[in-house]
Image (cartoon, rainbow over all chains, first blue to last red; front, top):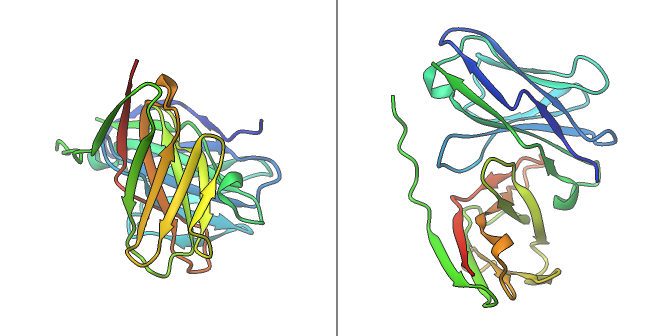
Length: 115
Length: 113
């Protein structure tokens, strides 16, 4: 079964440092997303990406965040200067063109800890 | 600083019983809804979906009911098994032309063997 792969599974970084979270979406999917989940809270939408540009972003996705699809397979989330409150699980997801939940697949997440 | 987590609603059921998990959604314009299961340390896993032109949809051991009048969604799990223990989230697509999802707060289901 195709899956979304995220690396690393756990990242510890010092406050103020830049981090890049990496994702390999499902190969024939066209829409890519980042979500985050602060410990014990609900999953929150950050950004969606289609046709090499951001299609939607939430208020959380401020100037400290950026996304990129540097090649045909990877999709990255960069946080330029991490803050303590950026500590969370970050989930990448992808979906196919004929959008349906069954094709909307989440990765296992990267746990980001900012110290 | 320390973040305070939300107090998740919890549901405990005996193995073999049926479970009903409820969700209230916020946007009357939402036209697509999904139930996800999330096990500890894992990402959300698709269970079943429903579009707003339907009020019921059945899958294997699961049924989703949609009541648009009161903006309520439920997930019924038949013959609940220990492997069903997880946090269950409903998610809505706000029908803005984008594919982003808005998640509910979740319900923790514990199945007692």
